[in-house]
Image 1: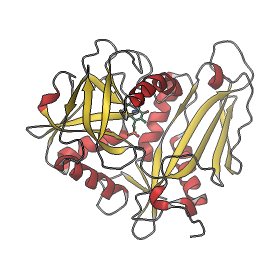
Image 2: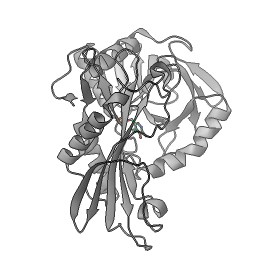
Image 3: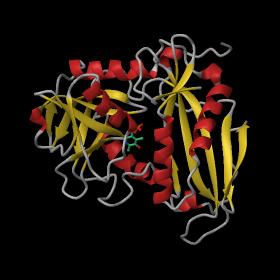
Image 4: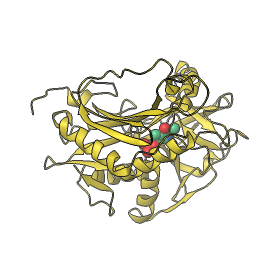
Length: 339
Ligand SMILES: *Cc1c(COP(=O)(O)O)cnc(C)c1O
């Protein structure tokens, strides 16, 4: 490979790679520019993405296998979710074929930047759809840009499978009961910066968001989904219309049931009933699985398996998931797309 980076210590930081995919939408049609160079976008100062938050995005990874092949994990699911987010914000859908081919093209064009097998690093892809054009009234844009860019990354939460501590938030929500919590839109993230800062100021990794109507049930862990393993061996993850439907979470639900033989359910997880859990975790493409060591609930820390060690069931889930993603373990049908 022509590129030398500190592959073991990439962190989760932006890097300006040579190629990205671009397409523009106007008059009801997508026009693909294919792969382009240069990381700057020139857009109107009046773009709806800038003023009214008319934008959505995705996050997925490309993995290098032991034999050097490159592969994507369930990009069809990211395509479906991008289109669900787009519909919620009255943006045009991106055809699935264009989405998946754009991801593959970006991986191929930047292949030297896909970290070597065994380093734990991956190529993170960021598809982004934004409303642009000249317009100032509150209305859907008449033009859109779809772009996919990429960067090599390591773990999102430093320390990988080391447990992190979180702060339950009774004062701030990331989404409203019937708002845009289930859409992957920037506005949800802007609203989460302040509570995230409060948590970090108290030495917690992030906030645990509760259901916005009653503040009694867990919804999300920062920008990751929550799951717990009960003392009698059931995998439980919250169900709510204001949770972002994590592809990692649905993959773990499947693997818990079909590979680990656990009972796996979506249901209510009450913040005052954490004693039922032997282990807990946060999951997402960027976080993969981060064990939840403890949650501060109204000033008292509830410790799960351990504040320093990963529990046995989460370790098995992590090994199964990452084994599939890096091509060491056979994947359920349709999960892996060769680049
Ligand atoms: C993207 C995201 C997740 C994780 O979803 P994955 O598909 O597993 O990457 C979880 N919560 C929020 C708020 C997100 O934006």
